[in-house]
Image 1: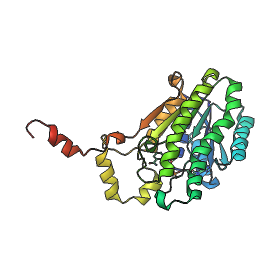
Image 2 (image 1 turned 90 degrees about the horizontal axis):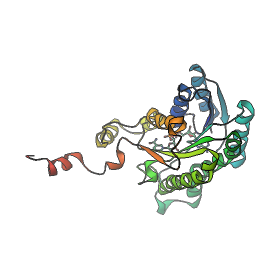
Image 3 (image 1 turned 135 degrees about the horizontal axis):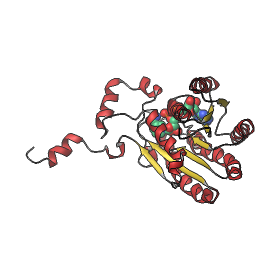
Image 4 (image 1 turned 45 degrees about the vertical axis):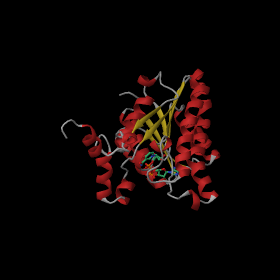
Length: 264
Ligand code: NAD
């Protein structure tokens, strides 16, 4: 196992991608502190981690609140002695056009998606420095490089900013053996999304992906496990796209081939 007895904290891990990441880390031997706004959902993930034979802690807290984020990190440290891996996953993405967007809606998304990454990353710096290293991994999005498929410009801006923050923090923390990286999932099939998108739309998106599949939370978890492992020790300030090739999907496959294929 790649992460035997490492101590991990995953935010927004009550469902979807965060839950997949928490379970992926646990399968590799990590002990996982599960944060979510919803205590019920966090407990559900913690139960599944314990069922895998790994210890779990539950932290219902709002990552946008600096005091709650710091208290959460302090509790992980006092219960388990260290924090080896922080995964900043909690995020929200309402869909509103800028012309209709209230300033409060802009602030909310920036506070949770970007402020949450700042709050939790800041809170682990002391503990990671004092233990001689650690891994900070933030979940940005393909939206951070292009634009969002189903959320607003506030979401796109927050995810782009996470990539800048990641590069800069990697520079500041490199001398302390702390790796700071990001993962950019493309369109990822979470249980919530599965419920909200009609099957024909799902099929159309799948057909458009170069790999002809949708990204699942487990695929994002695999990239996080890699970045959290010793194999990625020389990687910092980077991001890994887990998008089934979605960033290349602006072209229609059939017209692409018919314009190029000899004899078509
Ligand atoms: P989701 O809505 O299914 O789950 C997010 C979880 O975060 C929820 O359990 C929610 O309660 C929790 N959360 C929300 N605000 C919080 C806060 N302030 N403090 C603590 N917890 C909070 O979302 P998801 O699709 O699993 O996305 C997870 C992350 O991945 C987000 O950062 C999202 O932007 C990113 N992402 C998702 C996709 C996708 O297609 N699903 C693609 C790219 C990036």
